[in-house]
Image 1 (cartoon, each protein chain N blue to C red):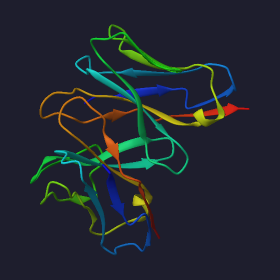
Image 2 (tube, one colour; image 1 turned 180 degrees about the horizontal axis):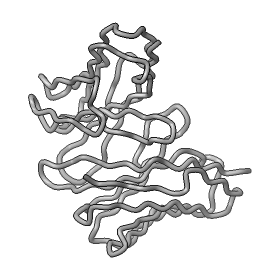
Image 3 (tube, chains in turn brown, green; image 1 turned 90 degrees about the vertical axis):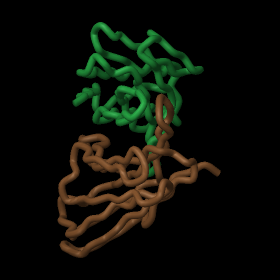
Image 4 (cartoon, helix red, strand yellow; image 1 turned 90 degrees about the horizontal axis):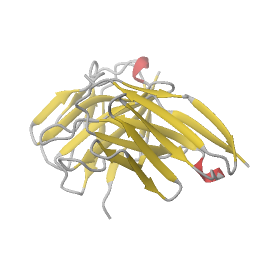
Length: 112
Length: 114
């Protein structure tokens, strides 16, 4: 089954404790992206990747890191989480060109 | 970069009535306009999209119209049903080799009242 997976789905952590949210896709997509969703603000892009070892900042990259060492994986790293990073996070992937962007199930992160 | 505005932020309709959600975009080069539906607690899923060389596209009860001159596009849902209740996001993009970012509107929460 073609899909994008994320782990964990729910995470409660404390300020400053490093965490990683994993994202994996099995569709051989070149493009992958991370978004955060906050009430009234829609989906805002954090980082994206056009291919292995190629990443770039989106609209809200501060406080986040990513890596793309393999085509299927695109982890999101919060080196020192803060309460303003409490949000719902979505990973997505798509093939190049016009076409559907597939979203993962989401990760709800709470930073206290 | 691209800026997408979406209205209204909330919309309530009676079952069977029509619903219209409108979006405007800023970059005249954008050429791809998808609409995503997000049910409560679920991921966004594509429901319909339109390319800039087409003015209207229909899929059963949903349709999207595009006015390139005015830089706006709209989602139309006819004969609404309770299962249409969700948050709808419009997006715009310049789709070409090497450029695939979607710029999303802020969403419309549609409630269909039985």
